[in-house]
Image (cartoon, rainbow, N blue to C red; front, side, top):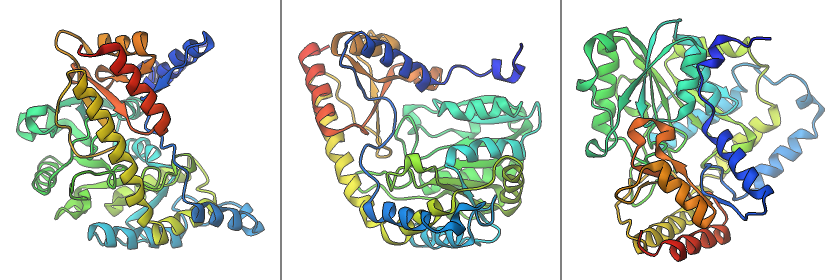
Length: 390
């Protein structure tokens, strides 16, 4: 039996391949420490868990979710309040916010709502691999826009060929950026809006790391740029700031026409988000935001620990100030894959090769800080012992 041709265009998902490699080594008795996937290990704050438990006992919440495809109005209202408080962005809960089963779902539904077969969709290189998969499943044509260290890992719109921009109907952007950790600026967001308006390109600004910032880096929403709601949407999630990855709760906000279109895709795809999870999300957004600061202290400590170890083995650099990843240059004379394999073979430590995120990821690997302290300390001690100075 043949599967759909669209699936054959999609490369193997990076983390699935990594999991297989790790599983094989563990089966062989190797104590592997993975610094690859961005999955917070700290617990969800207890009051959020308690809210879920209490709401789950109510039989009314055992039925189809309220406002099925849109998300509960109470949840959307709390998202609007949170955006106003955190980013100074005003949103209409009725028309400009949509509940999501995590922001990753929003990427896929954005393509289904905006992109026709054969349409060009812009994405950065390096970039989050799921964007490419969503574009291909929607039968769009991905176009790689390089993001380079010398430009702060921000795309240079003037370098995008005019004929490509004219054909493009959508663009994925993600700042703070996975994998590089780079952060956007207000000027960049203004330029992005102008570029999108000039070529009628719908922006999908994926912003789940909006709260994961270091060294006084400014918290920014794409929607804070004048005119942003005319040209796109922003995706966000409770996964990273509230340690709720497994809960699968996020939101799309912005342009009401795009929000309505994505809602139409959702109503024909799923039956919404379990009510108790949405109530827990309300609790998180309303009362537990102070917990973000405590989580960031943990990541800041781990970040400095990794940087200190890397410096000891001769890798000294100044990282960008966003996400819980470190985009680490590999030693001179090595490729990304060679250094990844060396870490695995010598120290049983797994990191993500930069080339998994695109050809411009060559020369880098990505370390994740979402690992228990004791395991991170052990991983770093192995690296320091095995490499000294590479």
